[in-house]
Image (cartoon, rainbow, N blue to C red):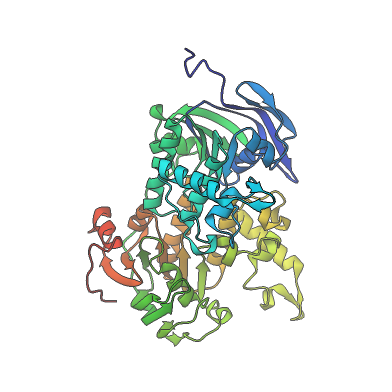
Length: 515
């Protein structure tokens, strides 16, 4: 009998080098994946993790290096080659057809036909059998555009399993999930490994890596730093390997100096697009200068619609919004943007124009101001470039070609850092930060948390919307819990526990809230 350590590696990536204009994304990287293991790939935003996995999946071809499967060299020129070799990938931004059903997405590209007619019955049986076996409950007839992000991810996983993939790549799989969905995914990954699947797991979240991985390889700025056994390391050591310095994992802050009311919401109601009920129901709250108020809750309880109503992306069914004493209930988005900054939940949909250059994204809400115009009509490209270069430097936004980089080509974390740079630098009295650290590494999270505290201490009002319980407890001065579109609790982070917060989030506990 061959022992695991003596068997050929399931996958070996040997001396991989991948170049893009202005950047070496992967610089002589070697990665070895054992059969039946969960192998984490850790690194800062832009360290080259997704690029390396895209080389393995055939989306890119490396300039140098070799890939071996079960000890034998293989050529992977495209994703079809990868699938033929049993390699599947769940991408950070899902590759699903929004107007297709779950079942249609799972079988897309490997459809069974008879006489030119699509045969769905056998496919449905196989999908439901896989769904039961791995605890991936989905509605095969639901359209992708109508289901939650967590359900979309399950669809992506079932796509891999339907193709009988043995090597499973998860690229930032928890970045868009709720804490409950993350727990479910961790259990699913462990079950897959027990079945003999080999998993490559890209993550920034050290606690998840410590919980689920067997080994962890670390990349930094495109270079391989080392591989460690999880049982022999800890979060602090991993963060040091990743960033190259010690990282503070706990937020330091002084007691808040509360000032005047900046945001005053009274009776806000916002209709739901998904169903006939209201998504936000008669919400009233106040946010004052010098405090961070956090809206906590399980995803899908009205937080998204609440922020849409506040920022002007959706009209209110009833209620009013006052900002700095002015009634802005019917103001346009552009006029609201003069008083508030907004880090949106969906960076691709509402944060960036992906096919614009980075410099144009940096001035999206300000290109029409005198600072960036010549003669009040034409764009002042020199001023835009200088401003963009300044923000890139100040916020360590990494891209291959600096300000002229097409934003779509950047890593998700660096896209997020670009939005944060733009919104924090813009004049504002209120900062709305929705999942601001989603997809960021520990070094970037440390910087963003420090920046939010600085905003608070400079007398700004900060409204944070987060699904990360640790972030909620660490950053907030007050916590408002939203459940089914209503504020059901107001908690002091110094006097509450994550367990009590969880009870409010699940709807098991509620109180009368005073704003």
